[in-house]
Structure formats: C-alpha cells, structure tokens
Length: 216
Image (cartoon, rainbow, N blue to C red; front, side, top):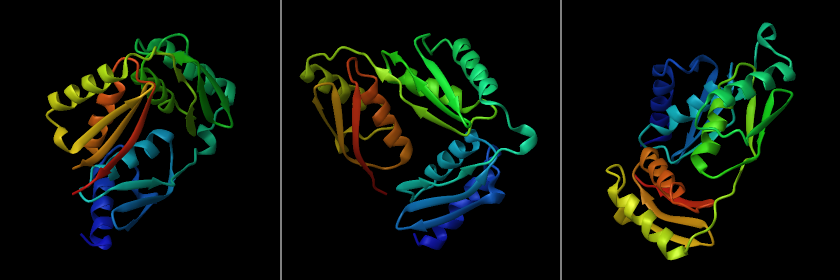
C-alpha cells in the first residue's frame, strides 16, 4: 500500500469515528508509520484518534503528536480537575484506594501501587476522561510477588493459545525475574494488544518487554 493510500485510509477512519473531531488532524504516512499532527479538544479525543489509526490495515506504528487545547470557557483550575479525577477513581470498582493523583497545568500524574496491570490501565483511562485533563502520566507501580519463571512462561503461552485473536505460533515468550519478553510477528494492532494483555494477566508479571512487530 502506498503512503498516499494509507494516509487517505487513516483520514477516512478518523472521519468515520464520531468520537474524533478529525477536521483539525493532519495525517502523514511513511512505510507503515503514521504520524498524527494538529489539535483536539480533549485528551480522550487524542487517545481515540490513535486507536482509530491503529485499526487501519497497513499501519505498523502511530506517532501521536496531537496537541490537546481546551477552549478558554472550558478551562478549569488544577484543584477542580484533581477533585474530579479522584472522585472518578473512587467510583471505579477496578481502581484500589491506593491510587492517588496530582494535577499541574492540566497534566495528571497518577501515583501509588496496585497488584495488577489492568488496574494501572483502568486508572489512566478513567483519569483521561475527566474534563480539563490535558495528559496523563502513569507512575503507578506494580507490587506483585514474582513467581517461578518457568511457570509464568508456560501460563502466558497457554493464554496466547486460548485466545482466538492470536496466532500463538508466531509469538515467543520468555520470562526473566517478573519481566515477560514477547517477540515475533502479529497481524494487526488488535492481535498485538491481545498478546500484551495476556502477558500482563499472568500472576507476578511486573513488566512486559514488547518486541512484537506488526506484519501484514
């Protein structure tokens, strides 16, 4: 697929997605790497624009350079944003009360410890949806104990084999001291995300070294 065709296809997907205001987004493609530039009105839109680009066949990487600019009449004080972020986190049953948030110039920094990666991801997702947030820095740490490495490796491989979205024959797994290393080729970003999620779901995994390549 030519760069011009890929750019047009990504533009079409951005326009198709009602969660993204695509008018102010510029798309450039270079050998499968898509760069997004321009401005959007919320951090949520920036995140959704990247997801839309990753859905497009032929995209192997997305460089999201979109700026978040909130209109003056919708700007909020950091203290108000922090209060709403903390309230949203408290109301989410997946986020433990060990998670805290600070806000400076619209940038949310999440801190604390949780036992599972999905809780880190949930906290970042929830914080990024709050009105007035310009970005999210996820400094939450995992405090899971590290189990025997071979058990982790086997359990991750079995999880990959169970998932219908993943061709497990093309994904190799190695574990070292709580770090799961994924190598190989996957056929889409959806398959990539499913493989990474499977690795994070293994008990005791505190880091995933993602070396997977998107190969169409």
